[in-house]
Length: 294
Image 1 (spheres, rainbow, N blue to C red):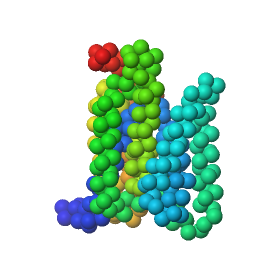
Image 2: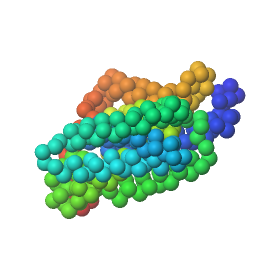
Image 3: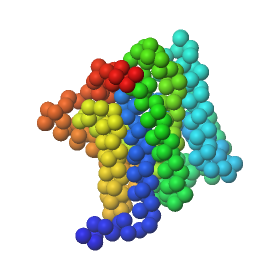
Image 4: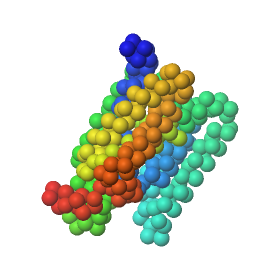
């Protein structure tokens, strides 16, 4: 028994565990909508779009999270502006900003070799480097994410399944879209320090997708995703301690594995089909929820 608890006797592993649990909860709130609306490409683009802000923050000696937030905010603003053009699809705008901001970040980084270590941490994270103050920041981010999710729940449900009905019900779909974009931005910025931008989708997408195979309501998906993400953090840290692997990558790998195991179990038990990401849960039921709550 002592051997099982040995990794978590170290204070850095304890902080990593708490950090991963907080990030899992944040990603569950945002990732549920990413899965339901099929916004994976948006989340991927936003995570990589933080590179120029992080590079400039490192160059100027500013907190990297501030640079990441400003860069992600610029990405969100650009998407809002481009989204008003009827001639450009959302994917086209995302792709243009994704390539442009990633290129700008690489250009900044290429001017100084001193960025090598920082970029490695940016891409892959360092979960064992979580400090006590980072936990306070993550706690505040979780509180904001929870508030946005609670206030915008009706609008988010309508936006996910029938934007026209959202407008008819007076739920301000444009404002809801901007708030949802901000929620994803918050999750990505809060998570990159823990698992890095290349691995952030391990917690942003895999747990909600796994939970959506079994849950039949949005709150249930969020709760299930948070629990799966927390379990992936616990198991990932444990495995990385004994295998000597990167903590963030191991956590992300466990989260993705949890999705595939969940999908396999749902197939075998025939309790739920494996749907497309944008088709869960039942749209008709979600629309009824919006109508009843209006």
